[in-house]
Length: 315
Picture 1 (cartoon, rainbow, N blue to C red):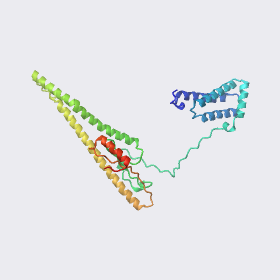
Picture 2: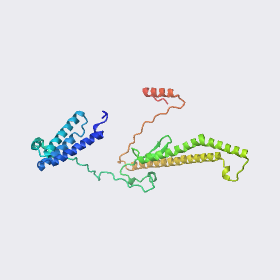
Picture 3: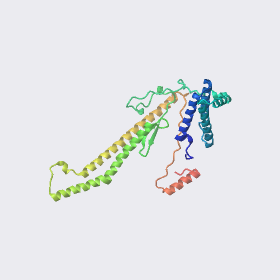
Picture 4: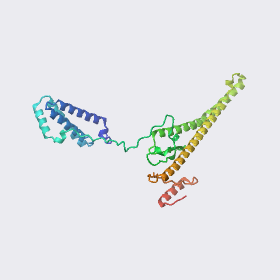
């Protein structure tokens, strides 16, 4: 087994340990000794495996396996009726410390105090989102009002309100879906401009040349369709869909901004009405100053390095 893999992560090691543990317990129950001694011997086996549960050294595991297989051979001999093996097993049980003959104590489970815990709010109805019920009344809070933060995600600047960290998986999934939706529209437009529209123009030219050479005129309106116009119309529809996506996003951003402004106003009013209530302090991250785009990349790196070393405000 490679040295960078721990024994507890190896399937072969785990299978060997479990097989030895089960075999020892089985032979302990089958040994022809008094019932109390059989029970005590099973507790000894459990204590030994619990003690070496986190052993990860070749030296420790080697002697642990040797002791386990030697004990298994002695119990097999005792189960087959060998008097010497039975006597040695009884003598070994007498020499073992009494603490190892008792069952292992289980750690008591922590009981959650429901009186001190905050009762969760009832889930929203189906089809209703969190910003649909904001701002909430003061009676629905168990403490000071937590004013959310307006956050922009990704290069598309998709905005959402953040109440706490970490970000829930459902929100990450919604942001990823919006980004993939916009990216699919952009990739489709690129494919139309680079491939389908030029190909449609060549197809229209081919159809026009064939009509001039053959002199045939079709009365079917579908034969006179220009593929170039169809592709450009499809591109125009994609432009409208992208504009509608941006307009929906801007309206959603304005709505979230209004919610945060209203939440901030209510928080100030509640703090003034209840001065003994604790205040939530939000740690704002230090804002990085942007370097003008006219500066060359090499100059930008030099300016950033000098600014960090001398701790001066450049812009």
